[in-house]
Length: 235
Image 1 (tube, rainbow, N blue to C red):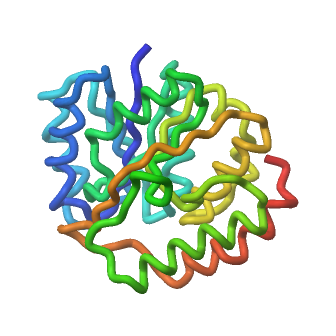
Image 2: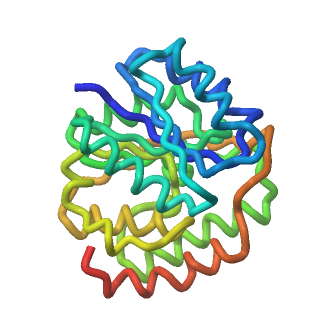
């Protein structure tokens, strides 16, 4: 069966064509779904211009506004499950996640994991081009999550992942209302609660070169307080 890479976009005109071409060039039978949140910079038009070149493999779902990362991925998961994809991937458009690592995540799932996480904080993983303050904030945020949710994942906020479809079919998407880092935490927590095997694969995370980060104070606060809410959700 084919594999689906899901990439949410908002104002990624500087990255999206390069990312599309890179993913399409890889061995691994990948299709690509861009979930586009009405970018004013022409991101959607750029993707649609590329579709004839990659007919049947490059797809776009356009939404009416900037609705958040979490809802974009849930939209993509539902789209992919309806079309029978076996493995579904999350990744960013800004090359902070190296597309060459898709094969390593897929291999981990084919070797027994149901969810493979591209991890910065296991042996062999690292972060490039981040200021020390941001690295420490991210590292201790993962520690904080582990202490509250009691999950043995080192990189709890990681957003580079490969799911087997059975994981997504089991999770109650209606209960996952988070939009940013809290969404990433919640999906891992739900997979573990349902008894799925989660494996962390070391990656090198590289800060974006082009475009603007979508990180905000609201996203950070949602993660800090959201983990307490997760413990009560019927995921």
